[in-house]
Image (cartoon, rainbow, N blue to C red):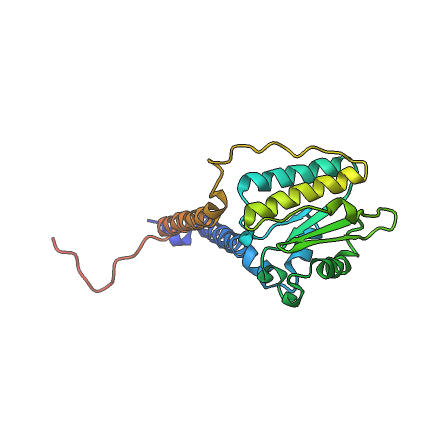
Length: 232
């Protein structure tokens, strides 16, 4: 009888599967740890806004319906050719290593503009619980601070969300890009989906490990120990 361990095809398949499992586990751990890495960075908002229109930290507490509205509003504004990026700073920890700029939205938006100047040439809006910061990185695309006059920022996550929606809409309108705030959609079934991602990733990794272990056993079945005669 041919020993299955001598079959090069089975050994190759087992090794390939093991490498796939390792890659999947590494990817899952990286995805689950992304927010922690971003928070530890010098300025998390500048990393996010380099490629996305909205920096929205987890501790902001903005309801999911408002998050969807804000994302939709920024998308609608961008479709009119009005470049705008927004950073919502709910606490000092959202500033990474520049916590000394907490509750200084105008100073922070200038700092943020310097961080983004090489990759973005548009308008920036910072929202903190105590006020707004507004900056334009393009002299040909000025901002109108007067559009923010009178906007209150109520306490809590919903208050930040409402202020952000109102501010973006007013600034766009002042520049001739009137866009309505999208209607709030039902989000009951969607809530908590973000928390499920690490659980799903862990379950997937565990399942892949089990499959790899089973394949390894089939490729190399355990041998009986020598020196023990079977009884008849």
